[in-house]
Image 1 (tube, rainbow, N blue to C red):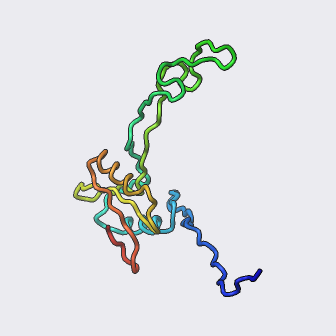
Image 2: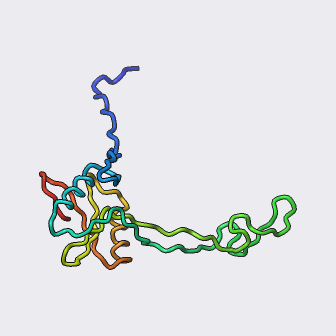
Image 3: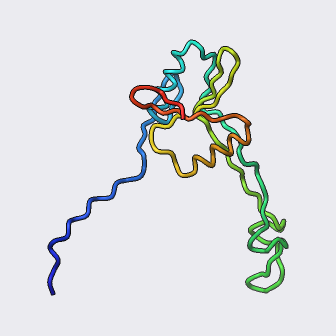
Length: 158
């Protein structure tokens, strides 16, 4: 049997994970160097009155679903005896509680004139779920989420 010799060796796959380094400034730990650099930029801006880091928002409230094991009855047949017993998954309630979702923005910036904006700093590619989280944040708060990137040594708003 002949071996094919004209095949090129495959290049190793690149990791899709973005590596970031945590930084501490003024006793505040930032998730990335880009986020810390934007914080320094905001501190130097004379129009900025107050900066809050990592504000959290509930974008999906807690909710309940019908238990899949007992189909909402709260009881199931015992494996040993076949007699009905309380469902161990929902504890006999027929419903299971699910936790909602929380979004954490990078900054809440308050300006001298009283205008407030929420900022998310991106130093690399956005995650697959970011557009949905952004829309849920904007729906829950009624505020626009400003996305900022560092391009050619200048902060660009998207």
